[in-house]
Amino acid sequence: MPKLIDSHKRKNQIAEATWKVILKLGLEGASARNIAKEAGLSLGSLRYYFDTQEALLEYANELTSERITQRVDEIFENDNNPKEKILQVLFELIPVCGNLKQEAEIRLIFKTHALHKREAYTADKDGVYLAIKNVMSNMVLLNLLKKELELSAETERFFAFMDGLALDSLLRPGYLTDEKAREMILYHLRSICKEDIG
Image (tube, rainbow, N blue to C red; front, top):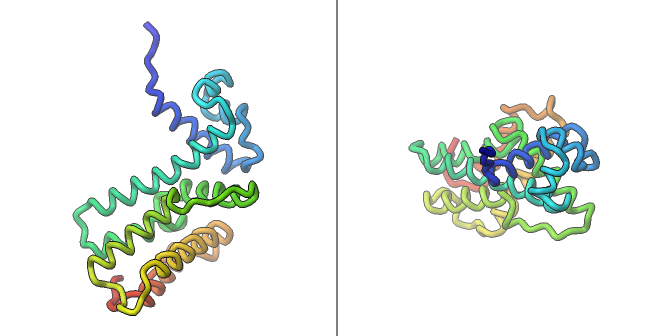
């Protein structure tokens, strides 16, 4: 009897193999052949799940946001103090601090790739942007933000700050340590919060 394969699980396995190839060889090395080899599949098997290279890369990109969103949801659903949850989410989004290093790095690679391809970037599909919106909503609910702040502008500024910090942590890994990244996040929070949350 043939072995049944969970299609969703296999597609995720192929997407994760795509991440590994991209991290080793860059996007230019993410050929179907290299990805199939990394996934331990034949080229035909890979083509069964993704008929085009573009479909595979799109799925791999979407999986990064999905994983980030899942991790953020797990944090917000735990029993920790609400302020601790906010800090935990923010620290998790920075490659040197959190468990999402691979996803954070791949996310930035895909984001800059869209720029080079002249594709429109949609923040509403970005796991980090959604996480920052979630953090800001929680800070509003907890009445932590300074009254004079404009929520939409501060959300965009916080997102840009976190993107820059994540990129810097990848470009200067010896300089931007876990401790320094945490200090910078706390410094930013002090600029928008009316009380210390860290």
